[in-house]
Amino acid sequence: PGGGEHMPRLIGPDDVRTSTRGQGTNTRYPRDILPEDQPAHSLLVVEVVTPSGCWSSYPSHKHDQDNLPEESALEEVYYHRFNPPQGFGFQRVYTDDRSLDVAMAIEDGDLTLVPKGYHPCAAAHGYDLYYLNVMAGPRRVWRFNTEKAHRWLLG
Image 1 (cartoon, rainbow, N blue to C red):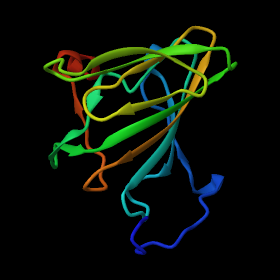
Image 2: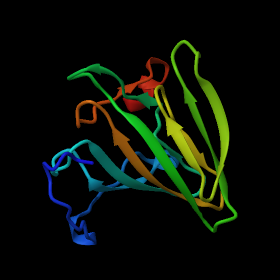
Image 3: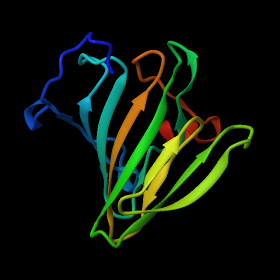
């Protein structure tokens, strides 16, 4: 599907960059599997571990406008797992004008689509949340815009 520009390859554990984002109840641990500086046709792939009781993809951000360098247009899919598996969490997907505003409970094995808008999620106390995150768009670059109401959390 990549148009023949890139040969298939194995991405092993030594090829994955790990980091820590956020602090306190906003801490999460991303693992960059296929970041924008690695060859691929359109996909960006990351997995994130969000500890029990913490938020992820927060402060709320979006990447649905093609207006680089401020923001890139990327659709996104989250594949959720919980440890232990009977755990649950919540995810909200919403736009500034609220033409899309969905809050959902997420459980082990759920898949959520983010066609546009902001998309924070949270893990219930006692349950670590893992998600595999796959993004794609017309340009293979990830630039996001934090929701104005929550930008103060970045400072």
